[in-house]
Length: 283
View 1 (tube, rainbow, N blue to C red):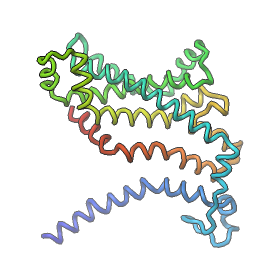
View 2 (view 1 turned 180 degrees about the vertical axis):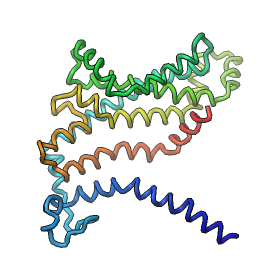
View 3 (view 1 turned 135 degrees about the vertical axis):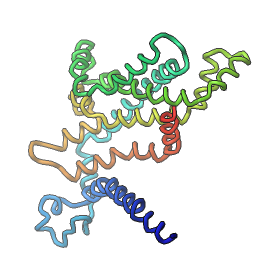
View 4 (view 1 turned 120 degrees about the horizontal axis):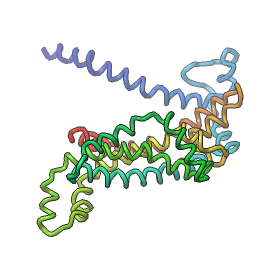
């Protein structure tokens, strides 16, 4: 029986999990290999000596040097970080207040309003950027970071609100009621009792909002045109693809380095992230 259980665990759990992990990590491995692979192996592999498809015997850092010295990659990273942090802060602040109000306060059409906010998150960005482009043009915000800082919350706030609503509902009301009985106001109970308990959910919403802002492509492509104002996702694809010439080494180096901040954030706050998602689902 023990051998049979072990066999079933390998077949139905360990093996599928290993295949899933390999498929998930293989793109990052391929980016790393392509980043250090010389041009001779990238563009003329049949002529390169000792060519191996999944590794290189002649690693080089030329692609990273070209990315850092010949492009505005450092400026793109700063632009993306600035835009993502501000958009996340605005969305998280609004999502906190809206999520608390919709989950704790009783007022007419609260449930319908919460559903409507979540439905707005489901509207495709490919449709929203058309009216938003007209608004950005009227306010003369085009080709500035504020064009993205003020438009990203249109899809970040509904998501943060929906996620925090579920987490606030999972927090017992008795905690807040005890604080109110002891003389605390609604605002004090919210700030000093509910929000500290909801830290995992707040961090989870913040990580999601930051990731969506960091990886967003359509709005950044439409609203930004100057090379020095672009974000990482747009700058890499627009400046390292010229006609039918793809600078694959530098493209992969930019994709690899551009994914590092998000990977670090997830690795540092993974426990809070999982706890926040679990709490929101239970709510």
